[in-house]
Amino acid sequence: MIKALVVDDEKRVRRGFIALPDWSAYGISIVGEAKDGASALTLLGEREIDMMFVDIGMPGMSGFELIDQARSRYPKTKAVILTCYHEFDYVQEALRLGAIDYIVKTLLNKSNVDETLQRIVKRFEWERRHTSAPAQRPFEAAMVLAPKGRAARDETPPASLAPECKARRLEGGLWIWTAAADQAEAWLRELPAHVADKWQAALVTAGADERVSAREAERAIAERLPVRLFYRGSGDAGERGITLSELKAAAGPAPAELDAAFAEWSECRWLLYGEDWRKFAAQVEQWQVDPARLQEWLRSLAADGASYLGWRGGAGDEDGLADVLGDPEALCDWKQWKSWLSAAALLTQQRLAELSLSREVFGSLIRAVLYMKGNAGHDLNQDEVARRIGMSRSYFSQCFKKFASGEAFGDALRKLRLTAAKELLIGTDLPIRDIAGRVGFEDDKYFSRLFRDRTGLLPSEYRSAGQELHEGGRP
Image (cartoon, rainbow, N blue to C red):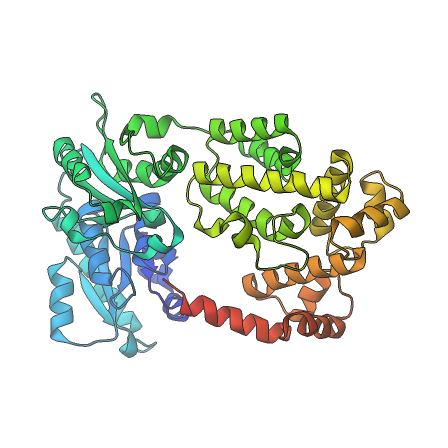
């Protein structure tokens, strides 16, 4: 069976192309789909793929660029061009880069798909019999640049950094230039300041006794180097050299242990007690927790908990978080986060004193909000939450209102439910009635009315606006 990948930036086009023929009748199995060149290269590194159907006109990395990179890294994978252009120049360029055939998408239909796929399979089999993959040189060294912030993830470093070598883009916005060790080191020494402002640089080398392929090396670099750079710190230029064996040796805790740690960290004792802060920071550094997961959790904590933890300028100051502590979206390594969180902990201590609440009570109220958020879709009431954290209903009501800057329990619960609804509206295709039920509203009409009152948009309008924003910002 020929294992095939479909690469096209239009989801509807991909799905339509995949649904058109009975692929198994031609000995083809569609084992994956990708929306862009970077995603395709990631899949090629993870799976054995014999053939890929590639759209030419994709944003970012074009189909021609993808085929060019895949040919050098995965020479056994054959390419078929998908194009809307039935022009000689496009066909010539595709064939020059090693494509075995091309399909004009606008002309493909049920009447000619059989002939087209039979021709492609016949050509694929001929190529497989009469060509052999060139031997790959073992990996020696590479200069790698990783984006410091989200804005740099979609940028391309200047070609002048290493004009004698073509850069390749890896997963996560990394760029790699493979070369001899002395050449890669020379490029790093000459790295311009304006590039170093946006990118973290690293020299990755094969150890003295290591012999690995470029494919294996790039997979290790894409998986582990961002973690190493995140904990090294963007301002630390001293440790640029690292071997592949060092990258591969890095291993964190078991998934269940890490999940338990995140659950414990979410209770925020590390914001209230110095010993818990030291334990939290040491554990994160020792385990080198996945930066994507850590930052997503911390940014969610900042968004959800800022009004309760004293991280904003004052009650009702919904936009003051960045003004008080600095924008968490701009933080790109652990050193910056650690400093930010230390300042946040100080603000929490100040709020604790202003509210005249003990650390134990403050911590219990944080647990109450976590429980409310995790169970917002259930029939919650104040009695149940108070019992959950070991308080009487009256004392909980009194403390919670103070903790929530005057907001009553019911209003806070509705806000949490609406926040959960927003996530489901953007992240799923669930009907609005189902979403209302999932976040704790039995009456979907009341849910829609309340949602409009709080956001200015009906749920359907909010979903449409979010989808348009996502499509407009698509890489």
